[in-house]
Amino acid sequence: MDSKSERNRFQLWMIVHIFSSLISLLIARSGGIGVKDFVFAAMTGSFLTAPLFAWMAMDTINSKLVPNKNRYGFFLKTISWIGLIFFTLFSLLFIANSFFGIGIY
Image: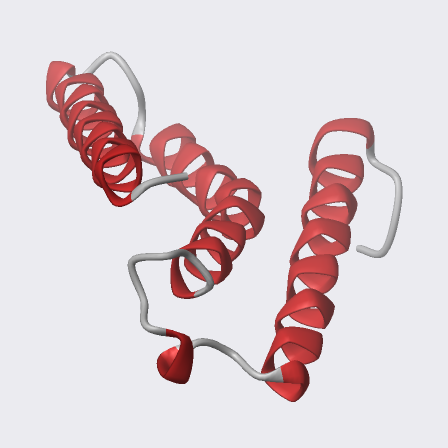
């Protein structure tokens, strides 16, 4: 992938994040959702997007936008993958517990 396509991908992600933030603020401002429900939705969003943000950070640091000397070495790549697996498993446990009542209380 060339540098221009990497830059376009970054700009697309920025636009998606800005619009999703605006939409969530509009929902909160509308008053149609109680505080408890909004906090649960925010917590759910945080837990479920953690693996995505971890992968995005890992993908970014290992992209062509970052010079080779600043990219992760073997040890940090291993730790990153372990963290990504942990976040994914934790998100699945959160879904199982919150929505299906399965897991540790």
